[in-house]
Image (spheres, rainbow, N blue to C red):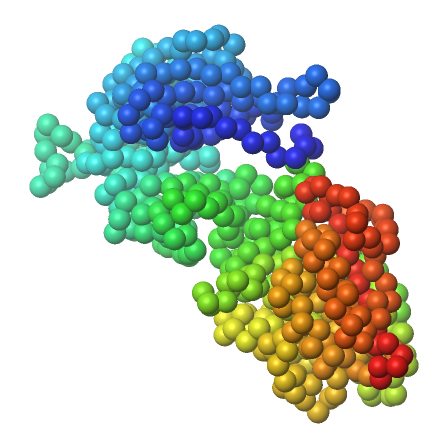
Length: 574
């Protein structure tokens, strides 16, 4: 596909579900409804990527109209051109994309809206449906009636999913706040009770998980770990469940071990889905209008990094941020530093991306920016080995990182070079500095690196201490706010050692804006610094050009380049 992400708009129809074809990587189906599914028609959109007139791929859209809203869609596992939809009028329809206009088969057994359909990837001739009528039904596309009916819940069943590991295991979630697992080999009914009688018998689940005090809107099976489920709902929380305690043949068990809870959404979680590629990564979508890629709680998950890498591989689309608040980012140094003053590489650094107090969100300190990674990948350009060789015995090269956020360059410097003393600093926000300090400890560099709060323009004595000012000051994506340039320059004046060998290295993504970067360089020169070099560098390639404020670039180019600026004291200024 290797093209920038394409936007698909369907005016008047809100999307409820999308499904990738299991046969064609360039084909997806969208189920949508007019008026957000409250009233009106539905539409099935068949979207394909096909060669355009110029040879570049373009989107081709075929529409199939329905008289009621569509809430879900699932591709057949046995026929590459067929798919099934769930409708607000209680019907289920089978479509063939090679035949226009009308479905090739329809069933209407549910008495209320059908909210989900799922095609088994093991029993490939079987699909299931769930409805607001509390029923789950199993179907064969060649049969005129359902194969099996489960009275799964007394209230709406939002989703029913076949296990990708056991062919006769199915999970459901409901308005009643439970997740249930059914063994389809041994259908049975719950003994009579207050809410269960002869005319309305409840099907017996092998396990019922009291998942939430509110509605559970979505579930998904982990693709690699049998009997591991994720659920999400109105309580805004994503729960990970270990259901291995199920005993074969024993019904009506209650339990499920909650392995972890994932927070962050501000409104109900509408959809969860595990990665098909990594066992510990899942994606979520919420009514807070955000989609998130999360790790399931293990430190090595690195979910946002995976998402960013996917954008690059699929669409040649360079992200400018690599991680967001609360996510884990792992970086492996790719440069070979041969000087004996440095340790052997590659080296791995694992970081938790910090969050900040609400009052400090405008700092944008809760991200790891691509310029930080570029700086971390090119530590040899800092000249630390040469500085170390010029030091008296026992004296270390002093390095300061300003606006460190998670501390990627500074921590990697401490881990890579033997004769350095590093301070990673950022705004005095309690959450931010705690995470930064934890990252230092997590990467075992506490002996040569400390995290310190420091507000630009303020007295730097707390970070200078008795060790003096710094031989090297670094910063990544610190120029984006022009109103802070004066404070940043004051900090550089107060922290950089008054030495002809002392240097400032600032790396800024071109997305900062050419005139914003140029205004900083002009102000820095007025403050007594010389611009030793300013080079535009291609992030993913070898190209380099001399900085030009009048350079011509589009939005895509701005994501592909950084500016590496080296500043030093003007000779008469020290």
